[in-house]
Image (cartoon, rainbow, N blue to C red; front, side):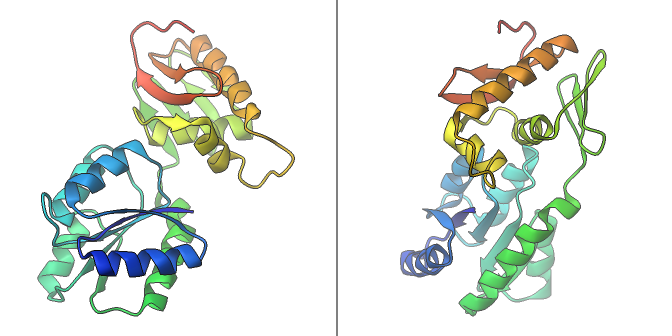
Length: 227
């Protein structure tokens, strides 16, 4: 799993990164709120851990900007603040959990595990981008008409629709959608992107999966698509 850690105290950042990495997480560490926003816009994360008091943008401002894009990645706030009003403000900004410094690293690990397990429980099962709607429970993709998607097609389309305008490499897509299948390789990504492009065309969608075989892909809202 990949995590984003935004903590401006570099010694703490290094310590938390080391423990998370030792427990099997891939960690991207940044040191201010603006960098956190930029990383969240570019990359796919399973969870994010933000300090509140950071330079350039505080954690609450950064999270509000991230949530405004439709990103629902679980977020834990780390802060020295412990007053009830501060906790409420953090949760209202879009945080899922709140941990007051100093904290036990075992508790942070437990909360990250809990959030990533529960992520699917509170994520919307119906997604819309442009004219396209994806109903995950029915496996249905619709615009001017509707088509059914196979399980892996729906999983791949879900990734794109939860992260519109965000670019993913072939390897990132493969790791996210086919992570439990040892008998596949990343070549399968292009095959399924091609399937989805055909189905988007068949429903007269105004969105497109942009990118070339072996490279990066992004779902964009466009009026005319050349496949």
